[in-house]
Image 1 (spheres, rainbow, N blue to C red):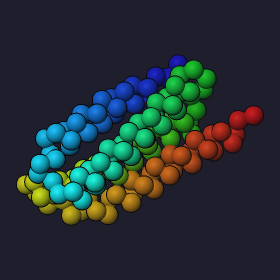
Image 2 (image 1 turned 180 degrees about the vertical axis):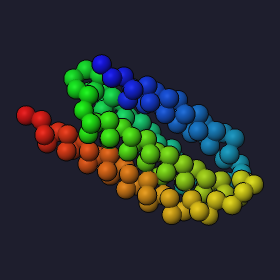
Image 3 (image 1 turned 90 degrees about the horizontal axis):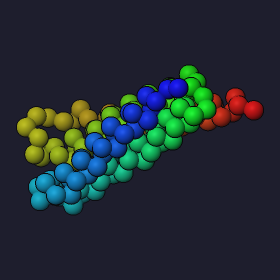
Image 4 (image 1 turned 60 degrees about the vertical axis):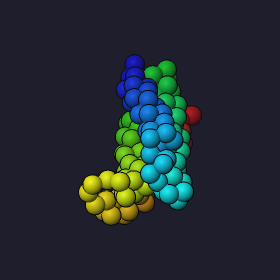
Length: 129
């Protein structure tokens, strides 16, 4: 049985809650309303795709470990890093001591990675009888 997806989801879920709490309590006084919105959007997609990782991981552990499912997990992870990570950086750009303008073009790459992860799950389901 392969529990790597479940392990990855639990770590990412923990990190998501910690980042969300940090944004709500420590960063809120330092961010504009728009920056808070961007930060929360990052947390939202981070959490959605952590749940997707968990669902795929549970399925893998109980039924099947398949290349397309492993690929979906990796794409969801990369999407969280690129999409949510870039939004976290962009939202905090005024309080981070280094330039983060490069993160803007990374956000849509993360979105494409999310879509590719969902497509991998779809292709896996399509091959099953």
